[in-house]
Structure formats: C-alpha cells, structure tokens
Image (tube, rainbow, N blue to C red; front, side, top):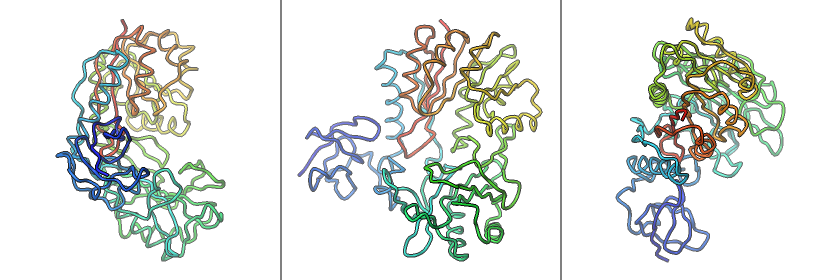
Length: 431
C-alpha cells in the first residue's frame, strides 16, 4: 500500500493521507507499509523521499529510540523545534518576541555525560543502550551523540570486565554484578569520571580494572563504585566508594570552576550550556544593585555566574548533595555575594520578606507546582527568567503567571540535537 505523509502532528509523529500516525517519515514523502501494525517507517520503505531526508548513520537507530532525527537534516530539525515552541505559546495566546533557535555547532558526539547498561550477550558482558519502551539492552558502545572519548572508555571497560570475569547483573535471576557505567567528561579540562554501578558491594579486582583503564585512557582521572542493595530503575543510589582518584572532576565556565561528582546536576551538552546561561543572564539584564533568587539552583552553576553581575544572589536547592557541591563551588571560586540555602523553594519563599529583582527558575521536565507559582506572584520579582527542558510544562506554568507578568522574550536552544527535546528560555516582566 502506497501512502503519503501530510504533516507532522508533533515533534515525532506524522499524519498520513490515510489518517494514521507514523514515525520516521517526513512531510511530502510517499512510503509503503506491509500491514496496519507497520508504523515505524525505515529508509527501505520510502518510495519518494523529502529533500530533508538524510542517510541514517546509526545501525541501531530504529531499534534504540534514543534519537528521533537521524533521518532528518539538521536544518529541518531546527525549524521543527523552533516552530514547536512558538506554536505552544501562540496556542495559549501568550504573545511574545520569538528569537531564532540557537543551533548546536556540533550536533553529533556532544553528550559529556553518558550512561551504558550491562547485559549478557553470547555468554559475555556487553554494554549498551535500552531499547525504547522495554527492559532489553542493545549491545552498542559507539552512540553517535555521545562523546567519542567516552565511547572508547566504554569499549575498554567491556573488555576489562570480561578479562577479569565480572558478570553483568541479571534482573530476572538476581545474579551478577555490573548494572551500569556512567561517564562524565569535563569540557574545559577534558578529564573523565567513571562510575561503575554494581548490585551489592562486591567488585572483584576493582583497583586492577581502574589501573588498566587509566593506563590506556589518560583522561580518566577518577573511578567510583556506586552500590545498589535493592531493585531500582534509578542508575545511581547514595552509597558510593572511590576506587581511584578524588571521586570527582572539575570543569570551568568563564573563570568559574565547578566540582562534578557522579550525581551532580550539570548540563550534558557543555557548549550549548554556556550559550544557554549567557543568553539567560543577558536577557535578565542584571544590575549591580540587583538581588537575584536562583530557585532549583543545583550545584550553583547559574548562581555563581549571576553573582558576577548582581549585588547578591540567593541559591535555593532541595537536594543535599547538590547543595554541598554548591557550597564547595562558592568556596573554591571565592564568591562572597552568594548565599546557598538547603530548602524546598516553596517553603523558603513562603517566609521570604525582602525584595527580589530577578527570579531564575530551571525546574525539572515536569515544571513547577501551582503552590510555587502562587508564591512567586506574592513575592513579586520584577523579572523572571524561566529556563525549561519541556516547553509544554513551561507554557502551562507561564499561563498561571500571565495575569501578573508580561511574556517579553522566548528563546529556543537546541541542547539535545538528534532528539525531540528542546530547551526554552523565557523572560517575563512584572506588569
């Protein structure tokens, strides 16, 4: 059966002339399907291709699901994301100035934090990526959006685990040791932190594995073991021990140094992160007399950068590990006009009586709570910078603020190239 794609319904799903939904097909393309269950359209199914179609470079693209756009030119990805953000605002009648999306100059191999999961394949431990919507791990260590040095470390670790006969953990039998490997790479210093996640404390020959790894990859500065004692979908739990090195690495933005541990929140794309924070702070137009409130402040990245421009910055973070990292980053950078608060943002602001010139918020993908938005309206910051990795929840939250705040600027940033995710920065000012 020959079908024509009419338009994109959203960032990943397309509508065809038979009124059915399909993935990996572009507007204007004609394609064939075997039967009604055939909804993932591969290159071999295409009869007439769009000019925006490119050759898929990844052998597991259609099986993995981690990337959404390896079949689409980068310019087409940018247009799709930019119009998606603009449409969300316009649908809710939140008029604004929409700035052109900030492109990623390196849309491949950009992730400086990567996670691989362990599985058993042909009686050997293999590292790879979860298949979309399943518990199956596809053995693969050459992901096209992950840093290439980190990919090479994964390949070496796979060899070392098998050399030292360290088995992968099997969730069904409850046997085995290695569950995941997490790697962070510092952009400025190019150093790496490797975290081996195990079920239980046992990791035989841990020091030898670390030594062999560092001998081959001089960029690896520290190796950590993260220990699980229960079944969990989380990659990292609280129990950790350092196998080699300090247990953390450092990165730098401008002249500010940041300590990164395995659990630190730090953007996965450091090049775009710098652009994101620069644009956000420029939009805020922070003056030397301003008091800035950074809610959801994490390890203090944007707080420290804002402190260079403001009179005083208050950084509020509920996660203890991130709060301690922020305190350390404040000390290392000798910043005196930053106060780090370990508290829930709503509970802190409920009792806050002082003026706020600029409030910065960068919540999780779920957005923030109605309670927090109501408290913001009472606190009355003159300006709000809302940074979001999910524009849908950002727009939902801004609708609540729109009675009291004007939406001035919306800036999309392509932080996660080849995927449907897009970052959005919005400037609001008190009416």
